[in-house]
Image 1: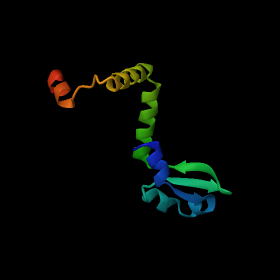
Image 2: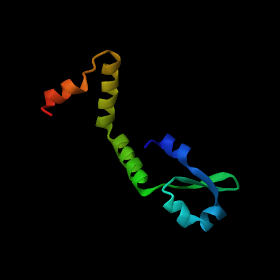
Image 3: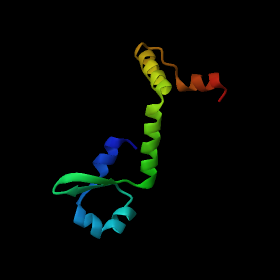
Image 4: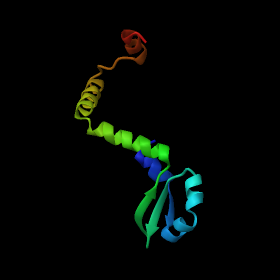
Amino acid sequence: MTTKSILRQSKPVNVREAQAKLSRLIRSNRPALVLSHGKPVSFLVPYEEMLDLLEMLDDLKDQKLIEEITQARSEYAEGKAMPAERLFRKMGL
């Protein structure tokens, strides 16, 4: 899940409503944007989605991975892409 999709799916709730309905918000397994006086103050995210987001952050910290992604995008733009089936055969998968 992407951060944009999490934000789009989030339900805006004010602080009092969040306090009164915390159990329901958690069980809904849907992100909730908590507002105070109309301004965001907190974000309630389902556990599995939070783990995915943290994993993405870890990946972004990996400079070598970022460089490989940049190189791959450049090669793809130059038409140097390889079909997945051929890549899998090459890898013996």
